[in-house]
Amino acid sequence: METIGFETHDHSSCIASCIATVDAQCRAQGLQFTPVRKRVLEILLQEHRALGAYEILDRLREEGLGSQPPVAYRALDFLVKNGFAHKIERLNAFIACTHPGETHAPVFMICRLCTAVAEAQTIPTKGQLGQAAKEAGFHIERTVVEAEGLCPKCQETAPECR
Image (cartoon, rainbow, N blue to C red; front, side):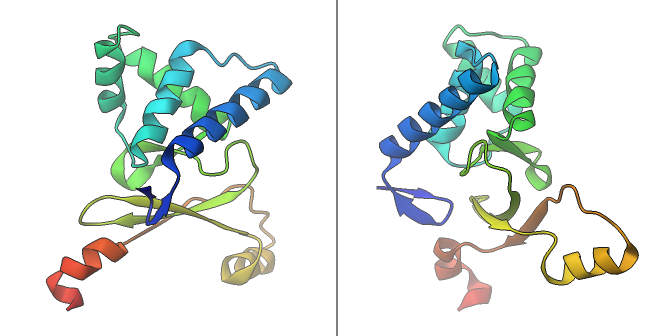
């Protein structure tokens, strides 16, 4: 068992399940799940942490799948556009989606010490944000929430948490 975000899980099952889900959704939607796109998603899933485009490009280069930045960026754009990965703005990095292809509003919890990222879901039309939007006559189409703090592991060692 390895850590996903802040929880443990069956890592190999997680990767296989996600790749199969994305492959099926691409086939159903007529999308091209090319070998490079698949490999980029596998790299994100293997790490279960946010990775920068150049970290991904380095791995692709080592495997002979491309050496120019557009290779990684095109694959990442595809994955993000189709809901299979997310961009973590705070870290200028990418992470595999824990709910690939599902319509959802992710909330990212980012550890400021180890940069582990956990994904949770929210309903943006509910709660205070939803109420404020309703009062303003605003229709929310997309939200991205990034919360910074300390993961459970780092809380054990951080002086300010003792």
